[in-house]
Length: 197
Image 1: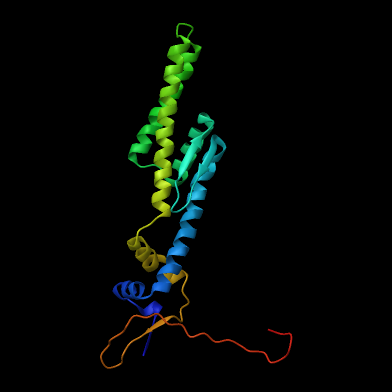
Image 2: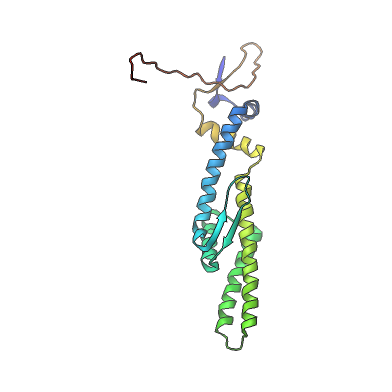
């Protein structure tokens, strides 16, 4: 008998994912595309503050900051919209914002030497590099998920949203045994007139 994808339990879906290599590849590709779109959306507010960047799977991901004020404003927007930063990143971002305010005050103080101002500015730049590295590492984590992440994505999203409802596994009527191989019957129309496909 046929047991359709919509009728399968979570445990059965886990077995379907495990037994179907082509399905795993399709799920991983779909998950990458979805996650890449998500990372692109998170990166968008920061782009104008960057001189260069590289983001992708199996890649050396980095963000090279050009305009620190524009970059920090972009990070704040990305954080508000997507929660891009972990707790460490949030603390660092807050510290950078405070330090930038202090730097502006130092610039207006006639008693501060150029050397003191440059030292404070260089410290902020180092913290911004660290923040950019935290963000790039997060993007790497999102774009290079584990096999377990793929299974969760399949069960929680892909099976319902991407697979046709007519996908099924075969179950023996007597024993209830299944090999959990996913099947789909495809019907097509063949035309017998030349020039029409």
